[in-house]
Length: 241
Image 1 (cartoon, rainbow, N blue to C red):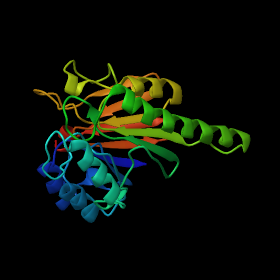
Image 2 (image 1 turned 60 degrees about the horizontal axis):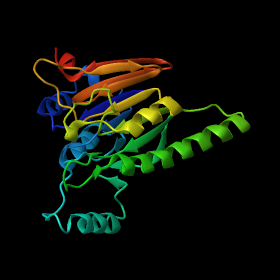
Image 3 (image 1 turned 180 degrees about the horizontal axis):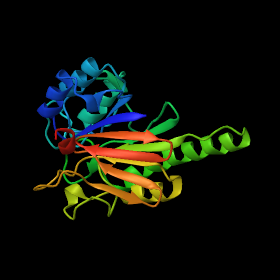
Image 4 (image 1 turned 90 degrees about the vertical axis):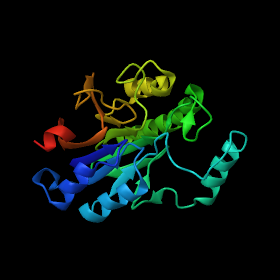
């Protein structure tokens, strides 16, 4: 399976590459967004590549102007009236959901740690509640796979925020979620895709192998090729060389 992963910027270089039908984009199976890109950008990717899209929202999702007092009310109204919020921008919002694609189960968690009154932000406790719910569902699936002797699907996690102590930073806004580390230890996903942490200076990749999980900061755009247990990641800068 080949994934085109994007995050945190509407990259005009990628758009140009798509219009030129550059070789590194051929045979893409799935588009994954880790958040903080525009709906128009995602629609461009889907329309031109004609591939399915899984996404989560970042912490800079735009909602109608609001003040601090009605922030939570507006978020609740947005969720209530957006009945099709899981299918939008030509793709599926996988926050707090499990979606199967080929031989993989995708799990998604939106937003970042709460640092102000903005939307799509969670305290450690709030995110832990969401993560534990999905963790239970995955363990239940694995249990029935074992009982029925079905082949177990590998898990791929898509988040906006990073894992605590892996690719995160010290300032509150860019700290990772502790519950992500627990999820990583217990569920053992084969791949973890995140955004939120922008590259600095000449940095063009942030890829870490933690036990059996490959963790990729998808800032900009990356291609990920998965062939059995082998995973090859190519960063956006190298794609253009």
